[in-house]
Image (cartoon, rainbow, N blue to C red; front, side, top):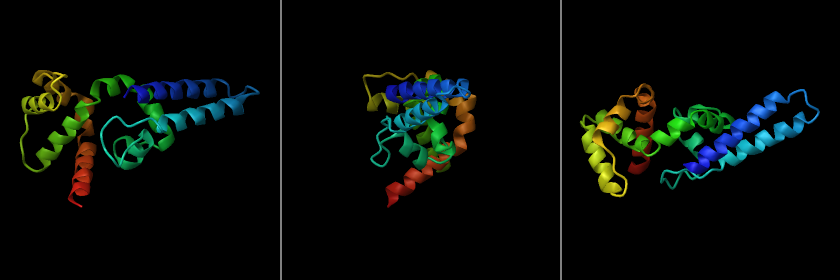
Length: 161
């Protein structure tokens, strides 16, 4: 996740310099640096384990409706603007996808159950049920629910093959 955030910051800086220097005689150079920063960011390793998705660019193409809803050259830049959310949400997003998928199949999974599952999966990183419950109620998570439901269905379909 750190690599994505670092490279996303570089995209943000390159984009800002490119915009500030539009009338500079080196404008082409700044534009090229921006494009290189975007390419580097898109090649950042995707932090979630998925053999089909290894980079941020592949994630943008594989997850339409979430990161894939953004044009590929804007994905890293958007993450840079929202890097605090990426840092905070990171691993919990998979728990959200799991909960939404279960809900779509009429299975009720509580925040405490999800936290217990996460704690079993990684005993070195404690996740409190109350903290997860607050996270699940955040407006950004509520708004993203349809996208995550589509992501769950896509992954479920892949597993069924």
